[in-house]
Structures are given as C-alpha cells and as structure tokens.
Image 1 (cartoon, rainbow, N blue to C red):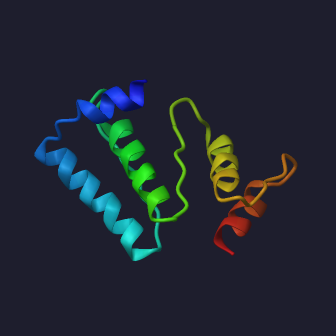
Image 2: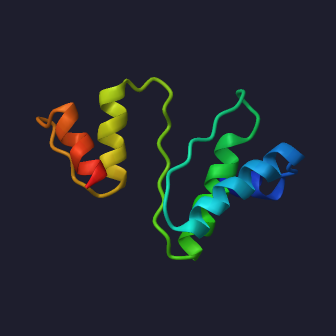
Length: 102
C-alpha cells in the first residue's frame, strides 16, 4: 500500500529529478555502483524503489541495501548477497572483497 501511495503522491523536486537521472544513467551504462545520500525524509528510498521497479522492467538486476545501523562487515555481506555471490559467514573481509571484484 505504501509503495502505491508513494508512487501516486510523488512530486519530485529538481534535486529529486537530478538524483533519479543520475541513478538511471548508471543503469543505462550497464556498469558501476551508486550511492544516494541525503537528509532524512527527502525521498531517497522512494527514488530508489522507483528505479528498482524500472530496472526490473528493463530486465536489469538491482537491489537495495539500507545502510542504517550496518557495520562494514554486514554491508559487505549484504552486498555480496545482493549480487548473488552467496557469501559464507566464515569468509574474511579480504575474501569478500576479492569475490566482489572478480
């Protein structure tokens, strides 16, 4: 329900349009990784959810990782999981980064 309501009531500012365009550019390039930052309540999650739906329509893989409260190890693990690398809880930081960059 919230996604439907958010989509219906999305009135993007110039900054939101610019952020969405930059994220969409990453999809179009087919490479790269993006990080969207901003103040609480400015629309980051909504922009990313809309872009994830667009990526799905374009048959491009995308996933969201909420960094709130994550330490570096948990972030690496979730990034690997999102990329379908199937991380192992016993892997070291170096092993995870190697798998990410291979």
